[in-house]
Image (tube, rainbow, N blue to C red; front, side):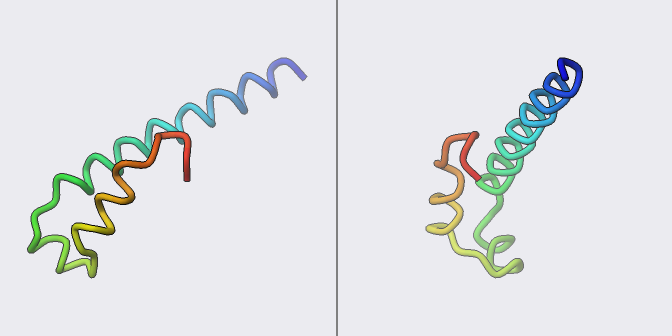
Length: 55
């Protein structure tokens, strides 16, 4: 039970870190890059300002 709980906690922390890094990277894209992937700045700002724990 204890090892399983620790693994779940570590996995969730990794998810939070990945999510935070992905949102930061998305926020650094240029307008042209955003257009290329079908996004706009408003959508990116909405996503980038979410707390790291929110999916």
